[in-house]
Length: 66
View 1 (tube, rainbow, N blue to C red):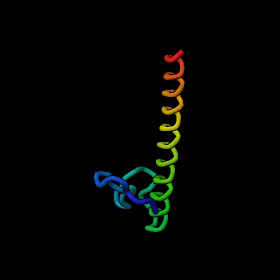
View 2: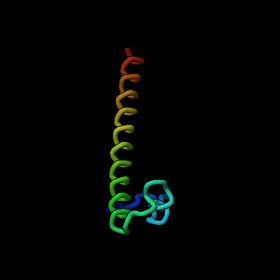
View 3: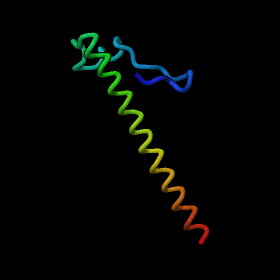
View 4: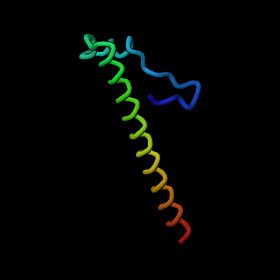
């Protein structure tokens, strides 16, 4: 399980997940696994987005310096 780095971040609860269509009948275990998978996916997407922004910024800085 991933830990929250900031106190204002909130982990999706099983009850919240089950409110979404298609997740209503998930067992506790299935819901917990899904929440964990969503957390991992979120971190991966955030890291990818951050990397792309960093590359764009470096390219912009290099173009401006020439």
